[in-house]
Length: 186
Ligand code: SF4
Image (cartoon, rainbow, N blue to C red; front, top):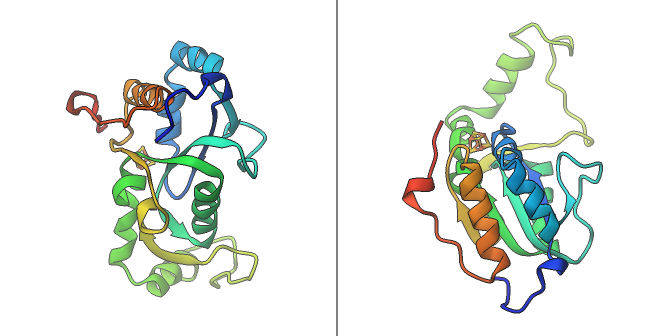
């Protein structure tokens, strides 16, 4: 956890999302005026809503990842966030447990790709696109099955209040504990 005595003026936060929807990040934005207050205390160095998509190589204190690891690009992002962030937070059920994304694990991948690209009208003329430049699908896993995670916030999506509380606890050097009344499932 963040050490006591760390000046909040120094705290940098990076966020990113892996496979699945933008619900967790929308919940972060739904902090509204609390987000504005937070921005007085922290510097968000990268996020899906900024131009800078990747966190800087060093100096990030809190990294927040939502979504599950679903392909080789997700795996790379999760590893990069782990390397570059002192504290890594798994935000939302997909990051914590795999969530709805893990439903894909119940289906044969080749059969699913065939149904999506060959059996269904698509823009790629009836073949399964395969290229070194494309992400390769992987069995879906929660974030802590591929990198070490320091804090978890379940929920789908977690409420803005719960996200605010979690970041606040980290900023004052406390280990955040999810509170039942703040767990939210839409
Ligand atoms: S936990 Fe829910 S809201 Fe968050 S990314 Fe997964 S499905 Fe979307």
